Length: 152
Image (cartoon, rainbow, N blue to C red; front, side):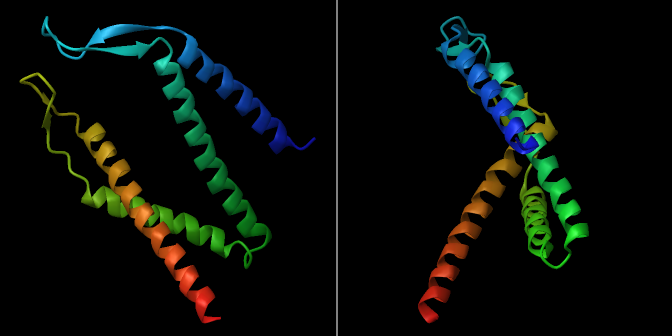
């Protein structure tokens, strides 16, 4: 059995177990604000574990994509140019999103204090802006391929 299939199965089993714990592991009601009459919301017990798993899998996927693109480039430079072009395109989208992002403090719901963590504010903006840019790029690619198919 190939190593990639073993890693896939291990990641799948770990994800199923963690998400099962997240969905079926119970939870607590916590207040949104410090006020006594605040609305409450349900917080699953294993939220941090599920978020850490998602973050770890994201990092693993990005590292694997970059490493295999670089290895592929050295093995077959002409064939892997498109892969590297895709990574450069994604890096460009993230750079544009970072330039467009804003770290202006925002007021928290129901409180008078401001959220001022510049890194988290920029990160949230980069995620939102890059999602929009990637959506536009996907729609443009679909439209371009449809036009190219019609003109053939």
